[in-house]
Image (cartoon, rainbow, N blue to C red; front, top):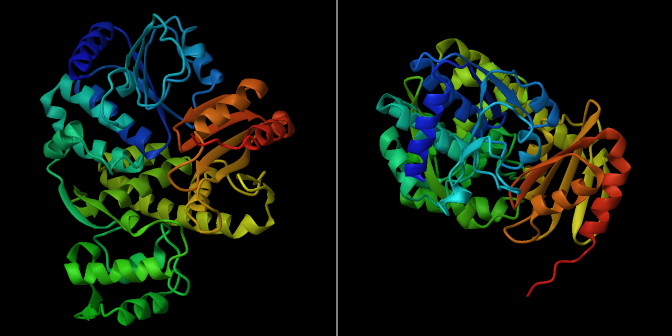
Length: 438
């Protein structure tokens, strides 16, 4: 793949020598960090470009692309070739999503699926491209790690990511993956959206009592951070969380790599940075998100404020779940939020639900929310086995029309609002076909 990236970069420079560039990227953390890497790279090359961040690559986005530009798609487009083949411009794609049709002649693409490579996020591909352009861009390696964490690809780090970690000079520690790992432990437990512990989550007194009961006290009036815990304290914390938490995850899910990045001249947890980037973009502040990624001082306070608002929106959305329309059987639950949850939040809510003890392993979670005249659908699996939800959504969208993207265990779709009832009926038919294990 590295050899292919060299040729890709050469062709890109050749095509853009006297031609403006239009960059399109996705609005999640991986897409924003990808866009940040590309932005800095093109600025350093003094190339003329403009950037658009999209929720999903719809046909309307393709139709609005400017003529006479080289098009660069980042962290999307691998499953949109039916639209892209109509583009008259030269198209370059850096993406890691599954390819579902023949690659058009006007497209040059780097995608790990074409090379049987290790899984690598859009930001990882953007970084490899940037590094090929100039060694100066190795200072952007930290963004590839934030993108990796944002797309939850940090479990199995291979050769490529090990090199990116080396380029980034990032400190990696094993520990409890609640974030931010650099902040006092009582505050992490009180405000964590990753786990829910009755009488602890949301309570400053409850989190202090929880830590006192397991023998973790304060030093000079302040609790240690996760990265400062010794082995015995870490073990006590894991045991206590496992006993008290209400989700489906195992003890192993609590342990992993903690990536510590020098960000705004302070050691920060990559998971926390990722969550803040994601919040900014999903609240429509992608420009703030990119400035924050590139450590522009003016964006720091804005990002902090947006992140606080985002967490409040999540709590509000979770509190609305009991009143939402639900269709449920042994294999699935369809939650139709209509206009009661923002479409930009529905994926986050689906993920939280899929990690709760409310539903059994192997159950499909399908969550829906209105987006003007469209419906955003997010699909997740409870646990690590079960249906390929991307294929599931694809099979329904093939009938009712719309766009699909994502992966085996987490996928999304966009369809016209007037297809709501038809979509639900077709979805139920597909979901009621029980999985047969061979």
